[in-house]
Image (cartoon, rainbow, N blue to C red; front, side, top):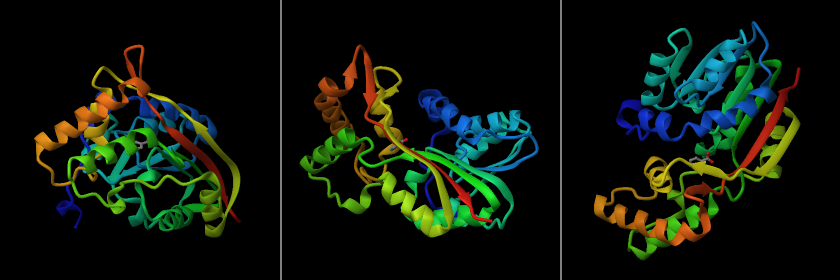
Amino acid sequence: MRNHVKDMWNAGLYDGNHSFVSTFGNHLLELLSPVEGEQILDVGCGTGDLANKIYQHGANVIGVDKSENMVHQANNKYPEITFMTKDVLELEYKNDFDAVFSNTTLHWIKQPKEALQHIYNSLKPGGRFVAEFGGKDNVQIITNEIIDQVKKAGIPYTSEQFPWYFPSIGEYAILMEETGFNVTFAQYFDRPTPLEGDKGLRNWMEMFCGNIFENQAEDVKEQVRTDVENNLREVLYQKGQWIADYKRIRVVGVKKD
Ligand code: BEZ
């Protein structure tokens, strides 16, 4: 079935303009602290940069990503690591991993309980889940403006088209506990994020907002993007740089023995 779903990810654009994703991921790696010989699953591995860093620590890492384009690029860059095209909801591992790691992915999964269950099942008893993704009100200034402009352009929009799940830390910690994790770390923080170049905000919208603009003509999308840029310049463009209003949650959960 996967082949019938359009792969919205452009791996080249991602590596070129969104390299901050794996750069910021270094902090999460410190939280993971991979140990030589551990089995580690990277959920939403993208083009493989963080999986490679885990591998450099001597761990055995498997990277999975829903996007074939991303996995293709990851395989080209790091042929010594195993990467597979797989959605988190398709994981069928049972007690196989010492750790599951996930950076900047889980906000794309609108069935968080199911995702957590698959992650939990993948872990060995005592194994750890270390993740970071968009939290409550993430990119709200940007998305409110996009939705306003979409509506003004007469494009039909319903909240189901909002592509992301951005939970509060309380909501997500409860889901983790209901799944069976001991939540040992939970953090919510602002992480203003530079978007590379003068076209940073436009590139970001092109890369990530496909669902919101679904089935619209290119000139209509262009107009919306231009209006969003014009309206947000005063708030989000500082010293020649677009800064996105990212808010993250970071969690660690341990599977009970
Ligand atoms: C994020 O990393 O928070 C994010 C990335 C793309 C779209 C929305 C949020």
